[in-house]
Structures are given as structure tokens and as C-alpha cells.
Image (cartoon, rainbow, N blue to C red):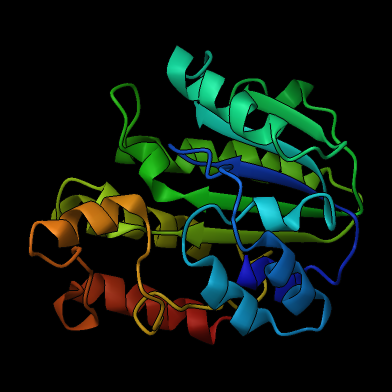
Length: 238
């Protein structure tokens, strides 16, 4: 949310969220977050949001259309789909809300001046798709955004607690960085992978702490050499 707030220019926006989880639960701090957002205090707003339930404060301003993509093809499992529509219904906001799939992108008709693409890489921890599908899925999203008549902002998130182990997480990151490196159409990447000071306040993190452990993190010192090289390449890209 903080990234989008800083780059969205407060334009009416459409947002496509590629995520295993909808992240659409109503945020109890929404009123204050919106005040901070309006004042330009994006870092404070982001800290208050934490790293979950972050979409609600962006609705209905600036987000006018929301598309949640949980699968490459077909609908999300029943309980996920039901939860998505149930959570968004309590917002009492008159916006366009759609559950879609990657294959249905070509039929998608959404409105807005700015387009936000939010990608949580835990999308690729699924019984039907995994790391090998990263390039094709990002290509489909890129094809859609290439037809957009207006500014486009992409954000890619890697949440280690939602993935099975470090190796899986590094693989997802590698595939994503390789794809980005092959697309010079993007401006220089803003990378905050290792320097975020935000405390993981998600329910999963809380459950891990309740067992006397800390949520797993990816550490820069543990990054494979080729991933460090890809990160440097992206940061130096004009």
C-alpha cells in the first residue's frame, strides 16, 4: 500500500492483485490510514497497515476497480471465493469488484486512469502452478498492461512465512528477477527486499510467535550469488 500510495499520484485507479490470499479483510485502522494517506504521510500509513488487510484503506479512493486473481485458470476454491466476496461486501463501497484468472485476463474490462499490478509470489505455491509458471504468468500480465492507456505501476512481494522453505522462496525470486531483467520497458526497480523495518503483523506471524518462534526471513547474507548479481543489475538499469 505504501508503494502504491507514493507512486499512484492519487489518480482514480484499477488494481489487479495476483495473490494466493485476497487480503481484503476490513482494516480496523482504515479511517486513520486514509487521513495519513491524504496528508502524504505514506510511511506512517504503511506502518499502521502492516503487511495484511492493506487493500481496504485504498477503497474507494484511489482504487475504483479491484480484480483478484488466485488461479491460472478456473475459479478459486469455494471457500476462498466466498471469503473474497464476503469481505469486500462489508466495505460498503460502490466499486467494481471481480474475481478472475490469468486465462480470463484477455476478457477483462476495467476502468481507471492508473493501473496497479500487485503480485504476491505466494501465488506460485499452489497445487496447480509453481515456480516454472512465473514467466508465463508475468507475460500475461505484461500483455494486459501494455494495452493500458495510462500510467502503470507494478509491485512484486515475497512473503517468506507463506512459502515452504528458503529454497522455494529464492527460486521464486530468481525467476521474477530474471523476468524483470529481460524487460527494459520498466523504469529502475525500487528494491526493499532486505531493508524493510516493518514488523510482520499477519495472523500467520502471530501464530508462529505464539509458539515461541520468530517468522522466517530471507537474509541478504544468505542470498545466492546469482541473485545478488540480478539485484545489482536491476538497480543499475536506466
